[in-house]
Length: 471
Image 1: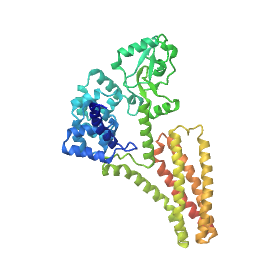
Image 2: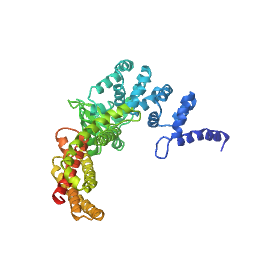
Image 3: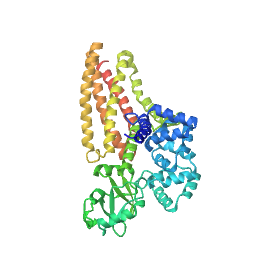
C-alpha cells in the first residue's frame, strides 16, 4: 500500500469512528454523542460541530434537536445551510419545528423551502406565524409559491395536504422511447422520488399508470397505452386515514390525486402513508388513555390541561358508581369481608372491558368491524366474556373458600365475576360501536364509559348477590 493510500485511510478512520459513536445498535442516538454536540455548541467550536453533524443522517439530526435544550437549538441553527435545513425541517416534531422556525431568518427559510418537496414545504409554511409567513412567501419564486398556496387551500389531514404536487405524467399516445427521452431532457423538474408514470388524457385526467420497473423492461416503440395499468385515484378532499386504508388494502406504492373535476393535481407516495399510519396509531393509543401527545418539550401546565378534564370526567362517573356501595352500607356493615373482596370484582371487570375495547377500536380502525359483521363480533365478545368469567370466577371461588372457608361467599364472588366480566366484554365492544354510529371518535371517550360500566356493575352484582345469598 502506498504512503498516499495510508494517509487517506488515516483520514477516513476518525469519520468512521464518529459514525459508530453517533448511533446505538438500535439506531437511537448515543448519549455521549449528544453531549459532544452540546459541548461543541457551548465552546462555539464550529469546525467540531460540522464534523459531528456531518456524521448524521438528516433524520438523526432532527432527532438530535429534540434532545438539545431550546438554547442549544437556537445556537445550532446558524450552522445549518439551507439545503441541510430543508432536509431537517421535514423530519422535526411539530412542536420543535415551530420553535426552530422562529429563529431562522426569513431569507434562509425561503431558500430552504425552495429545496423541499411541495408537501413538506406547505407543512413548514403552515407552521409559520402570519407576519413571518408573508415575508417568506414573498421571497419564494412565483411558481413554487403558487404550488404551496394551492396545497394550503385544502383542509388539514386530507389527501390534498398530504400529496406532493410534483408528478411524472405522459399523454396516452406516447411510446416508451418518447417518454424516456422527454424525462431525460426535463430531469431537473422531476420529483426526487417516483414509482409510477401517470398516463393522462387530453383533459389531464389519469387513465392509467406505468410502473418504472415495467417501463424499463419493454421496447422503445411500445405505446404507453398498451402497458399501462389501472390506477386507484385519490380525491384531494379525502381524509388521510381513508387514504392510508386504500394504500394498505390495495398494496399501493403511490397513487394519483385528482381534484373535483378528476384532473391530476399531485401524487401520494408510500413514505407519506407510513407517517400517517404512525400518526393515527399514536392518536388512537393516546385517546384510549384520555391523553394527548405531550412531546419532549411540553410544559407541565400543557400536560396537566390535556389530562385533567378526563380525570374529572372519570371522577364524576365513579361518584355515580359508588352510589351502589352506599345503597348496601347495611350489608357491608354486617359482613366486613364484602369490603375486602369488592374491589377485586370491579378491577377484573375493568381489565376485561379494556381488552374488549382495545380489540374493538383496532378493528374499527382497520375496517374489520363494520355494520355487516357487528352483531357477530358483539356476540363473539359476549361469549368470550362469559367463558372468561366462568374460569376466573371458579379460580376466585376456590381461593375465597381457601381463605374464608365460606361456601356461600365463594359462590357469591364467582357469580359476580361472571356477571361483571360478561357485561365488561359487552360494553368494551358496544361503546366504541355506538360512538362511531354517532359520528364520534370511538377511541376518545370509550374507556371512561367502559370503566363506569364495569365499576358500577361490579359493585351492584357483588353486593346485590351478597344480599340475596349471604344475608
